[in-house]
Length: 381
Image (cartoon, rainbow, N blue to C red):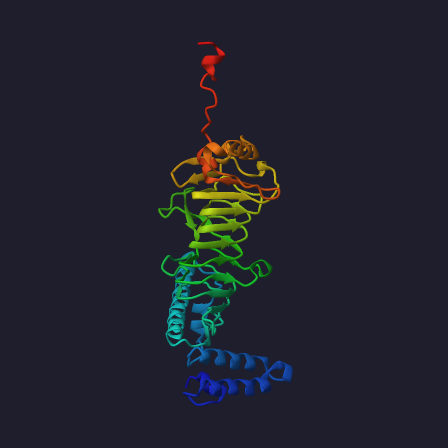
């Protein structure tokens, strides 16, 4: 007969959460290695306790442990994809349960804490607080989670690259999404995860996507296909505050505050504030009408790639080369000198500078100061 998790803890099936917790504490005092107990037995007891907290009656079998293991070696690529797809499926099921659990707490205006996943799948703890905030501790690796309120998170966010079906999608109907001390804790978002905040702000750390090559499916030698896992963060009515944005990432917000933009990055906002000194050649900056781009560091404009593109909402495209040849500050000076004509002002901040939408839109337009100036007057035609 297979020993259940209740049997391991020495309690009857259907015991309350309090009974389960008390049984675990009693056995932990007896078997913990610090108390002279057997470490293997303590691990077994702790796993039984963790399983019962999420409603799992029996321990995982050896086959389940292999199936759910996150690390595979010695298998063919096909087997790795198959097993990882099983992993993604299991994690997605767990997050579906988590989503329903959180929605029930919202409906009853209740607070609670619960673990989802497992040691082999990866554990994640969700807690709904009295103020309605959902706290997430642990790494979010696959599946969907929609929540009608703010989320604070301690952990990384990634997405499975082996299947589109179980991609990581986090959706906030209202409220902010925030990492706790993202720079200090080095939290990151990567590998094609998606975070959508309908009405609120996003505060995170480094954001990465992924682009890679695979061998030609038809087996042609030397031929490869490029696959991408584009990470997306969207807060159309709020701010996105992040650190470095790197390798196949899209950001969309009213205001975006970041450090550096590197390798196939697209950002779209009305206010764009750049604190770093690096923009690579394959970056596209989309500026909404009446917006501005503000550079805060006193860096050489040579550190900005000539081939990076600024796209205005009206469809006009400007290479950074076109701005750099104006030496940026000269562009600002020119704009200030003609602000009566443009009926707009420009702001200089510390050692940095600001480029407005209107400045960029009028970049190729020259005020006509003398109708007789030009080639005709020079050659007396």
